[in-house]
Image (cartoon, rainbow, N blue to C red; front, side, top):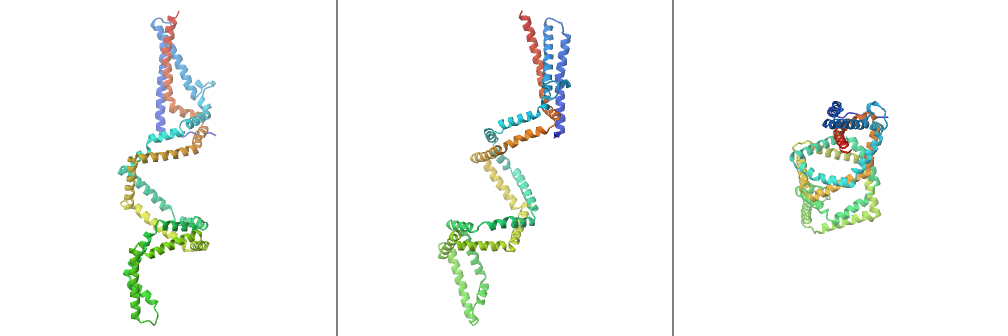
Length: 419
């Protein structure tokens, strides 16, 4: 079954058709001129004999090349002469040949790497994105796409993701090795000290500004028979000592409490990795959290808050997010433009990706050529190909007319000079 060809650009095809008709007229005009000259100089001698011989050979050359060009696309004069109308009859072979040509001459690793290196993709991208107007355009397009994407994600999509993907995956994945490895690495690299400092600072600040609340909470735990003045004195002293103790821990990086906390976290990490009882308790806690009805609701709430914050930032034309994105993009573009080592590395990665894609899918890409041509109607395919290359092929007819005439003159001269 053949597929009709669709004209992608009628205006361009109309211009090609006019150019083809003009060149056909020129080639035909030269043939007619040669025929007229031949008739007018027939039977003449002297220099007119040379003209007559040249005209005769020009006609032969013009007719031979007209036949050759026409035979590519159709039967000359409609006669079913063998080995004519080559494209309509052998378009499938042409497609296979074109497929092999493209695969052997364009989809080769050395050629791909050479062309990507010559294109200087990274440098050119850097030069283009370094301009503020281009960087702003990229940021505008990215933020618009991100806004549309976030707007299309509904709450029930997140619920389905949590219930159908995340929760089953978390159930199957043991949590103890992950938490244990994280704790061990965090304690070893002192990653938790910043969080400890923050907690101490906030706790000290709260105690410092909430004396009455602290005293009231402790007072509720005091015995009923204790005198109020004694309770006030004890709770005030406890508050003062708590503040002093927190200050000492906060200000002394080598405090014993800090060392004790480090030891406790390190031991907890080891237990999560190697102690079966601790691992079982961690797994039970994980399952209780996953089975809690508030787990999905909390995920939805977090998603809503994150989405609303991101949408607000993306929709603000003069907000800090867009400004930061544009400045970071220009900074990266400047590196792309100026750092030759980075250019070579990124161009090499791009070449590796393209080579991998071609090696893996190149056969499928070139097969598209064969499959597409096989579906074309032979006559329409010949007309389309002639529309694209027929104008240039008319030069064969023109050259055949001129060269034939010159050869005729030379043969005529040789026949005179050689007895």
